[in-house]
Image 1 (cartoon, rainbow, N blue to C red):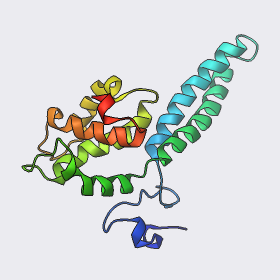
Image 2 (cartoon, rainbow, N blue to C red):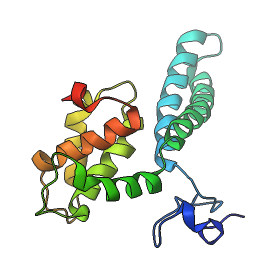
Image 3 (cartoon, helix red, strand yellow):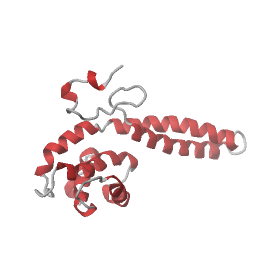
Length: 177
């Protein structure tokens, strides 16, 4: 069994989470991506089986089977998307890079920007196929719930969230503004 103690120091920051799986304790767990994928896949599976089978196998049994199959497939797809994003690596990157960003204000520290970055690099799997601008209303609402003690309101955090979003999606900052 792999635990945070078994992970080489180069792969984790002192005192930072290694995203341990809550059940197996293996590092690199992505429960949000898996959950989002499972929910979306389950709904799609239930709808597809119900629509495809009509009255032959459909009904509650067909919908339940579609829900289970869709949830498993969707969960695996969501996990695959989320695994492309390592929150420990992203946090380390932004901790070192935030001072070089055009929106950086010396009156703020990394802890002020961290919730905005975290939202940017973890939220994209929840908005598949959407641009930052298309997801912005949801992101703004999420930021107000997740900002913690950050002194930044959305108007100041938005650019940091966009920068982290663009980094994990590969979108160009210039084209996204």
